[in-house]
Image (tube, rainbow, N blue to C red; front, side, top):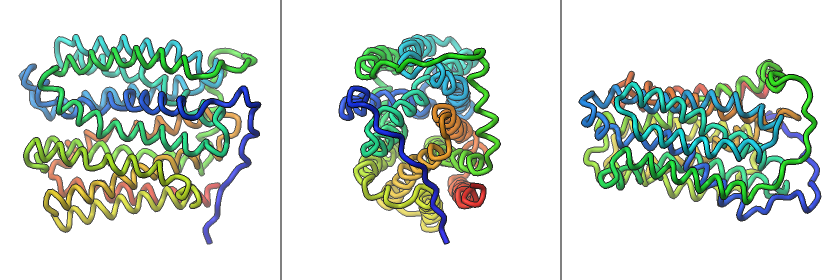
Length: 396
């Protein structure tokens, strides 16, 4: 018998405190894509960067991992601080700092400097996701909250496609340094837009020391159900980034045009899943998350067994991306159900787990090498994640 976890929805705040859905979600989705896209944008640029520096492209996968590690670590730092000081206040500082850090990457003279600056960039950009997701969970009308969260989560995921496609299309003209400068400008615009759409932070009583903001972290990690869900969350982007990195470095896609088409094939799924949210949320979060990861695993096994042509691979990747797009928000929802008053910290840990997976994904692709071996390895990883989700019911 399936056990459903639920918690009472927070009381609807006064009308003046309810965030306007349309403009808030629009700005947050675009900023989410920009923030998360910094992880993926480098993948199509690895060849150009390697040629310019005279190093093998495979060694530059650390540029992806470095950003992912800084990005994930930043969530642990800034999630609790958003609980303590306020979501809008944190982002008022965070997005301008992200613009400066991104511009610095553009002037890197060598791979070592670029890798170090990518860590700094990741930490700076990480101010946005935990504060934004906690803001949506608090300030959007409860009936529309899941639509808002799913839309923004899909924005984070859609960046994997959109920023790779943009980098592949524009990289020849702008160069990899130009791509980072354009991103820095976009962060500047985002800083203004986010501040304009966010409601003022409610008055918060700040007590205790600075470090007291992090006391919730060990408390949350001591909950077996949450720990299992965080472990499952790691598998989501680990498989996603490893798959697309594998397509890039193994040449499994064939021509650059075929690779571009495969990257773009997942975009319709990322648009469709948020539209289906009103029906998807009728399935409890845990079975929905486990089912999504199982679907992804089966799809990857199917690709490995059948070795489909270009069209078949594109269709199967669309199914895989749909599973990832549905699984991430379902895991987010299941974590929020157990978070209590420490929602910002709990969601920061969730996003940390998500992008910790994203940071190790390129190394998985480089380690497994052969594309078919990579497919089977990622399928096993996703199946383990689904098993962890189901086990978290007992952990609850």
